[in-house]
Length: 238
Ligand code: ADE
Image (cartoon, rainbow, N blue to C red; front, side, top):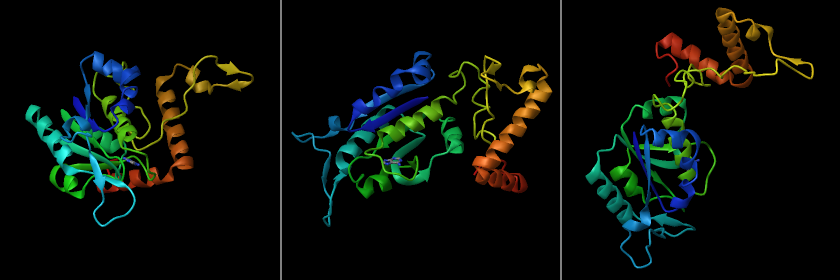
């Protein structure tokens, strides 16, 4: 998978991709992330990429011309499956969107700043608008890093144990069960006996029941979605 990210603050994206699983994905050649500085596509002396909003009001708006020049230059190199704009008014990101995006080859992510982009950018170029939650960040960069992380870890070969993404919270519409490691007892706090039993079927049953219990307690809305999916045949897809 190839992910290009357009930003006016490229430095914000240096660190997330330099470590851990995302770095491993790059080292293995499974995913390539490229950060593109929008200012390189501004023709002005000041490298201007934003301007005052027509109609007045506080805050600057990102101009269409540098963005169009940038996207059109990138499109000379590859055809994007999706051109994503990170914005608090987009659809709320979740595991099912991550799953869908992980099936693509080429993604382009545009990070907004200031008051956002000129509406015509959205009309002309954007195929998907994603929010990572009902709060406002200073820009789309951290949100883009969240999306890239959630997507890349799903690509086969990125995680060492390929089954581990399948047992994540949300993959089956349930939260993950509690997990334990050594020691088996810490200051009187014991690991559930069944997990030490070596009995795989019983362990799986315990984990499933613990998942359902945890979901019931913390996210009953997920159970309702799951029941709904089962009754209308859409499984856990929204
Ligand atoms: N840009 C600013 N806030 C955002 C959010 N919540 N999600 C995605 N992009 C954003």
